[in-house]
Length: 427
Image 1: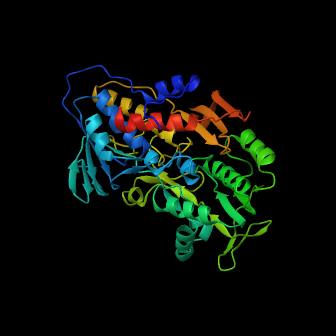
Image 2: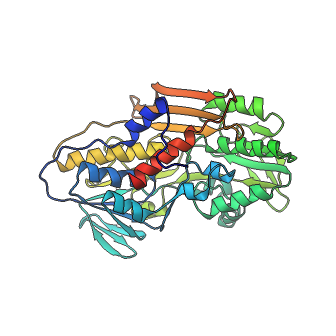
Image 3: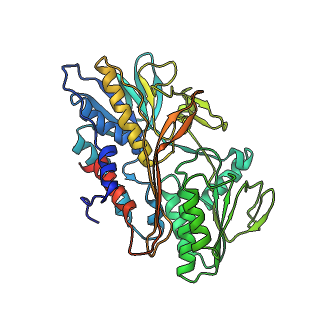
């Protein structure tokens, strides 16, 4: 796939707006030291854009991995629509192209009084520090604190929403599946990538249908309805996969009998041949250990940051963004990227002694519902705050479309992903 392919039509304009940094005015200021922990979509966006907004800043990205593998678009990889090279990119190349420093290390501690981040390769001084550390899994509700069960669920039935070995394991499961019931679960709350379990269920059902596999996908949703793109996914379930997909709402698993491969919900007992169990998500333990977390309305652990400034409460120069945040924004790639963009402008204006009004991140989400032809559901949405500070979808900026005529292949998802990889790593 050509790295310079761009999305046609309205999607071109949208990507251009959301993926292109706004250049700051050139001012004579002392070079600030800006350290970003976490090389996901939010972190990569922030380090790229801060070099545009404050060109003389000394920017350092701290990331424990030695290369980037994208979670967005990985469902397509599970079903051989893209290769692993499409998802995999170099942190070193990104740093060289955009003029910041990359250090492969793990953050271990924080001295906020002396403005020092402690890492596995030594102490790093900062003027401004941003944690964009993504999510970890939280199996507590599913296992009631049984750590052995949590490890078994993760290792044997991986959710595959943190890139790495989980995806490899799940892909092998799909390739080797001979028949029977395959369970996919949807957690409650604001989990990573709201449409992804529904997309994955559609593609798996398509795989069964196309390859004449005598199997059925059981999509067990803890929520009482589809969390996003409800009309489009329901249409796909009913019109495309009526004989290959069983969608069950309010289906929280209450008991796992892994020896006999049976799960029990409040209303059903379901046997399975294989599964991918998706637990709840939370901010990483590092932030908990540093005292930088809070509990959300769903009793989940997320960053304790001010929703308008992104500053950790009680700290004036330490920020958090991306999937760790407690606001109700979608935990997704485009949302995190535009959030990193907005935070870059906020930090730049702080350095210049200016203020900047909060801006909504933008969720651009394109989900596949079939493989041949490649039919997609697309959604663009922004957010606003209610009177009590709660996050709301701003419906005036929401657009949902399902390209369902079956005429040719729709590849907007791939063009969008490629354009974002280009921005984060190459352009």
